Image (cartoon, rainbow, N blue to C red; front, side, top):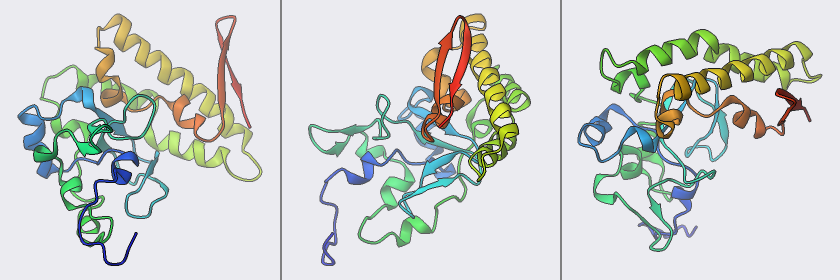
Length: 220
């Protein structure tokens, strides 16, 4: 990056590092349908996520709702590779409007502040609220975060490893129940529940396979 840079070059680097977290200032985008649940992913408190401020993976201090990536990648869903441009540029969220790779000052003023949570945007009485509450009972965000940190410590904590294995099973069972038994559209799973725990652990080198109907973990 040149020190003389003063405007966006449309290189797409920022968009490829992940979609933005949404703030209450973005509520109109959701209300008017510019962005829908199918295009969102929830990051639960304690989950590691890319920080556009530090440029590194950091544990989320609180729950975040972000625009999801494309396929299995972090690249923002709305980024159009062919044009190296944003597909909703005129209706882009607050963080995108403030982000300047050559001067992060404005973004720093809002990072982590006044962000949207799932309960802020799901209508009262929507059964999705019951699923969110059920997830917190079965797989508390703070327990997942503590177990992950404990397992990654030196030496690795075996108790935390066993707890994570149990949480992965609970997490998968809850998602299966919601989709198969309750009819939750699979397209909104990432918004309702966030990324599956086993996928989060995969980022730390943990493998998973099913053998004779049972889940086996391949710990690094």
